[in-house]
Length: 315
Image (cartoon, helix red, strand yellow):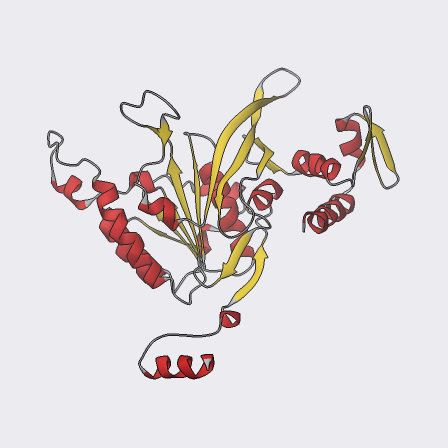
């Protein structure tokens, strides 16, 4: 009876299929364990794509991690494009993170409206689209106005609401990853609660499948007490492509290195793969006192095996 009704609906021109026919592939790991952990296994590949927002205060490594995703997908032979709304794409920095600029398309839309139309056209053609950043995309009415005009209240939100509905339609049967970089701004007149929020209104927050907040943590210092990096705290505040509300910490060095070791180490302890007795840590035949001594004994093969075992335990 159900199949008969479905056939009749198809004859009338309606799109209808079994839920089991929805295209979905295994998630892609970004290569940053902490990011993959908060994403619950990596980037989703399926119909509707994976719409991810990386947001936080300035200099909290949002763009750096977005470029890390670009580098990973390029290695897998995926087509990538970067919407450079801030005009801040840095080729030497991207190269340090593994991005091949000769294989990355760059576009700089003149307005928010043009960016929206462009996104609709790019979705069927590209595997990864990075938007850097939402806060920098300017509505046409602001471009046409002057600095003394006061008629632009919530102008971004007014454009983004219909733009999101149009994007939903473009995403049908396509599987792109869209990474939106966004900033945190202070809300005017807030007396109680969190005074920080991302610009763009509510519609775009509903559009995202996943939202990851970036925060700078403790500084990393060398022997001379010079700052050479920071701990980056990741907090998944929304995830409709996996388990939400996961948190993780990863070490980032200003030279461009993202070090997975600390997050793998603590995950190894959490999931019972690394045994801790006081200040001694053991993994297989390796047993050392202190984090630094223990990590120095781990070979690349050990680290790869440890990560594989952690993912098995997580599942």
